[in-house]
Length: 339
Image 1: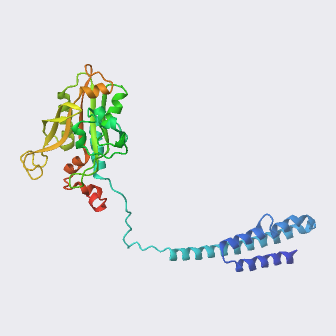
Image 2: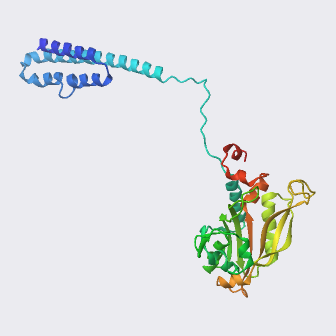
Image 3: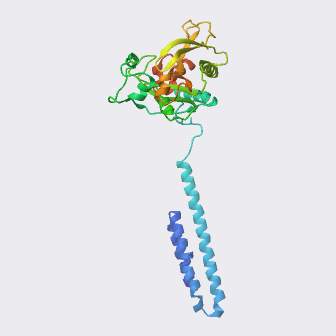
């Protein structure tokens, strides 16, 4: 039995010395010390050993197991050390090298401006509503008091898909959709992209963004419109901002007006930014035309309202003092990172 155990030990040592990986050492451990290993088989055969010899044989088995485990542990530690040294050599990091910069995106001035406008009106109790970019001719024109033969329709050179559908020229159609639902009162703004067949230049683009607002309730007057837009202007451009209203004409409002704000650059004294006038045109507005209310199923004798429309790019250009609208769409990260 002693010779057999010695042979098992020598075989185990030989296999350990030939192992070149931690996986191979684990196989040696299983083959000799595992549940079905050679030493375990010797222990299972102890029933065939004479009772008086069992203690001595058991001692030989334990000594052999201990010796194999010792040699295995030494070989494992040595191999782990070599593997770690090799890994550290291959994965060396020079901490003095400059870090690689992650190329991440940047918030667009249009997005920042829209979120700021939305925040102001939400604070006044308004709801933000989005509508379809492809509209019917009815919602884009007729429901806004612009019939097929009206000259105002010619001013909006439009992208038609067919005779009934077009790319919307304004987000006012979204307001009509909300009015038709008949859930009153209404306090909403409708931001979104609109399309017109304009030549590309410093102040025009065939695709741009609008934010249009609508309030419908009982006893709404022009004073409510003026107070709302005055507060909005102060929130957006500063507490010292003043507003003025000039008569104008829009088919869907009566009376209609264009609103100017005092130049926030020179305080109304006159500068290059406001072209020496002290005022900057900012939006169009007015009381909702009775015909528009009537076509949407609202009784103009009981309800009234006001509406306004803001060009988002115009606000962004003014707020960030950008001279050319085309810069907003060139996707130059160097330009966008300034804002």
